[in-house]
Length: 585
Image (cartoon, rainbow, N blue to C red; front, top):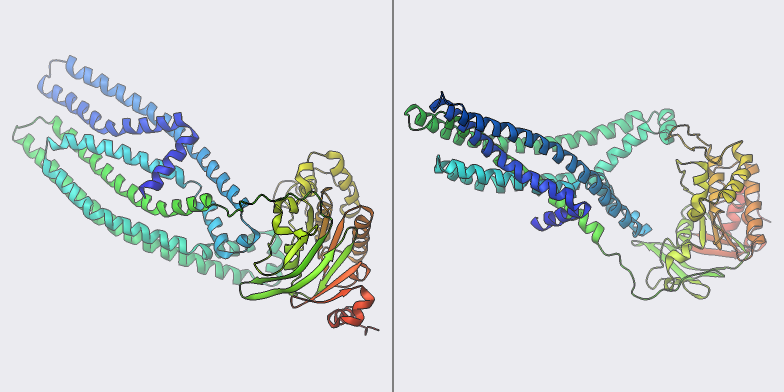
């Protein structure tokens, strides 16, 4: 535990050494304040009692006390600013590290439930933890200084008090640490359920789902699911709180009892004339401060025990080495051919692609057709370089060489994809287009040309028009309009050789569908070196492609042109007959 907190402390020091040093110095100073303050007040009272006609001595102590208060007030203001500065900047640094780490994750990682839950938990809860650790250590230092100075003072009054306090904490700390560990485990283990509760709340409060919620009267169902989960969380939280409350009650009762004993002994000594009344004030003040600092240390230990598990998860995530090959990989400057050679792919034990073989050549449009669940989406992810081929499961050849020998980033830079579940960016129209090649985002002439071409689908629309409904002055588009914008984004990169359209016409009307395929076909044929892969579960446009690949249950059922496949592929013939309602000739 200590190693992780020291690591976090030095991480905050890196944010700003001067501010961190000020925080440490001020915490040490504040740790001395209770005893110094108590001694000054004791001196004032004792001097007033014993030298009532002499003002010089008690006035000097009063001036010192006033100066001490002014200094401490200034110190608190400086400490608040320094902590605020470090807190904001430290959280920003941690958030950047988490986001940077996610960049190295594969699509498979994001499709893993455990990885997704971990990322959500860390992003939402852990960005402030390193600074919390920094504060915890400073709080411990402050409390230790206060306790040491207080103990020195109280030992001169009653040494038994110190022994009792130490004995109580020796018993209490292991119990508190155990409570913290149990509390963390409960909260971490319910990460997936927390995501579900968030999702149900999201469904009830956002535009994309509200139409179906109202039409299907889904509010009662989603609300009950949300309520059920939140009730469970509250029940768990209250159980943790109950255990902690019982602990605090017993602990504070014991500390208060010991404190009462020492104050009573001081009162008896004053009554018998052994000490002056000023000692009662100082002892009362120091014992109260001492008791408060002991409780503060105990609570800090609880917080640290709770936080250490989160810190470990955080550092494990951001510092885990991404598996990279030491082999120097070639960079793909241009794609001339792509060939799938005996490619198979599994999700766990489920085989979704089986022995796939086909080739795409320059200025060729290939249509990939098949019913839902036939493996088209997986094949698209492989062709886009989002999945790697699995061991002993064939290979993808690019320019005649295995894709695994190339740098995947350089490959993906030569591929542009319009996914079926494309992103509707809640950004400006300009950004929605230019994100297809973010390096060209400031190329106004290129972007404006594409904006101009979109006017026939969007109507008069400026490039700085905010799209969507999340932000001010946003304009919501229809499904077909969003798809037109996404298609324009797919055409943005000039350096891409392979263009993949995955069900690009799913939200378009018939007129726009015709224009879509004509534009795609013209684009591939008229630009040297471009290749097109058109994915669909319908055959209207596939029949005009240069080559059609038919997928059925993860296997290729046929490759050829329209007329050939009507004769050779049972799957293609059935799809044709269902789509057009006539028997194939």
